[in-house]
Image (tube, rainbow, N blue to C red; front, side):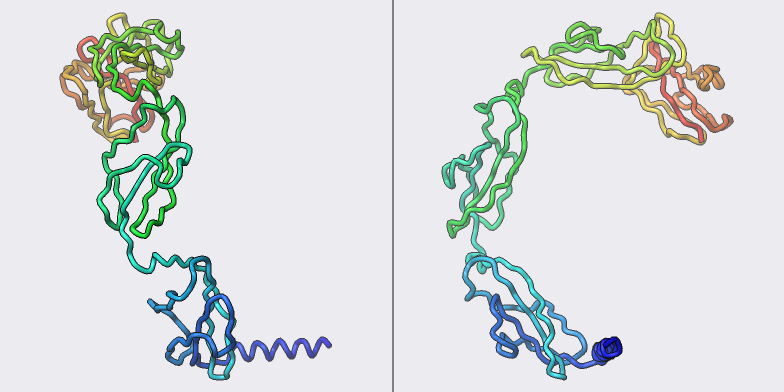
Length: 328
């Protein structure tokens, strides 16, 4: 019994390795009409069979899901197993149908044609740009916006969904009237250090941060603002490092950039305001000043320093800028 099984396997592999040209192919939908009785596909005899941009008639198929089967036959009159593809037939997709209507709704579907109408120009595509959608009647919280459209054949599309958060005080612009900051620990809303500013919908304000009494090391600076409706914003956070206690007149400021960082040589400090630099110091991790430059230049050379982590300390008027830099 074992020898017969081995012989059958050898014969099977022999037939698979022998070459026989494909000379016939056919396709059918859903139900097999029998070998040679399906829809013929014109092929060129060869060892491979490839369909590229081949048109298969679907106009007589009813709407719904269908299975397409394709098989071929070789010169030895042997048919292959069929290849199956799943497809969905929609009669109105055979010809282009322009979009004629569109609508939107929030959270709950009001029914086709009963939602909020969107004025559009009929066409094959729908693009909404700078379209105003009324949200004033929505309660505060998370909501789902749905948009769908209908074509000239009266067929509605699936809805497109977007998630959004509604805050009543954000519907109308409310100017910023107050701002405050604190370092590390929140003393409570409205109890932090006040920042002097001019009220407006957008505020770009420089301010001094008092660092007296702070320990050497990393600290977190937090800033928040309040609008005219009494609503406080989320907190904005900045991290800074204090290498040594600053004098009473020295306050940290953050409107500056240092580049390149890491560096192999020169470093440049770019100030956001019109402050004039009067001195730059480079401090190592032990707090020792290793490079000092007394000039108005905003560039300093670190080429002679060993590779490692340093702090660059720039003095401008009565303010001090401090940032960690890496020397490669």
